[in-house]
Length: 293
Image (cartoon, rainbow, N blue to C red; front, side):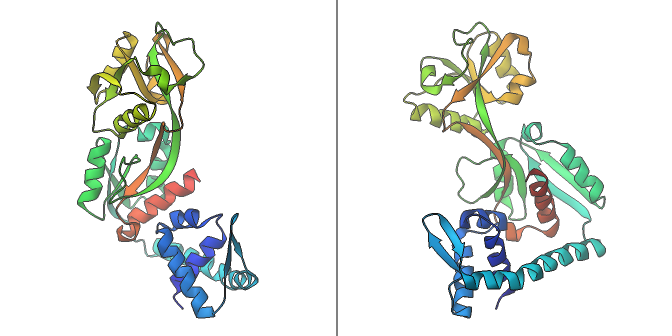
């Protein structure tokens, strides 16, 4: 019996679905299902019942969980303590960060991590979303803190935070009095867009098409302050996250929720393959997950 398969089994018993367990284990659902099937073949029994409501442990599954749960947890705790005892957490830890990440995720977590692991020196590379993806693609040992890639091919994405997007415009705009806005109502508007180095560019364009129109983009930029300035002057409207409005001159702008299920802004951690990351990178990622869970 492979001990890793038993660890996977215990994790699955603690989650509500295969997809959740696979996400927390940083493996595919197919790999998890294969591990469980192998255990069932070894013990010649069925460990889970697959129902329309999800998965349920069989009596044999409950027996196996009770036998191995504490063993698996003790192993993981012993491994963590051993890493700390041998002081392996030292050296440089390089990663890229997309703009806006630490406006939504408290930067104190980064500072707390540095205090807890003083032997590790964090080296951040601040680049646009797409450049962050290129950084991760260049080396399987790289990871980044960024928005969800528009295309996930070649990436694994671990979501940390999801946020609604907003209509940001001048207080003189005809829609400024509204409590919320449907995207299809903006078909005739002039749009201020982030350029194509940012995933919100593609998500906004796609959402507009789903709503039945091509957005009339009058200006594109990577400079959010420039886009906000044009919105203040009533030159166009900006679709963005709320912290952009909160950091601007709010006396001259409105910030109204967009009612559209295809429009959201999700940030997290991207990498090629979690298993190929080094121990310090995994430590950093697990730390952030624990803080945001």
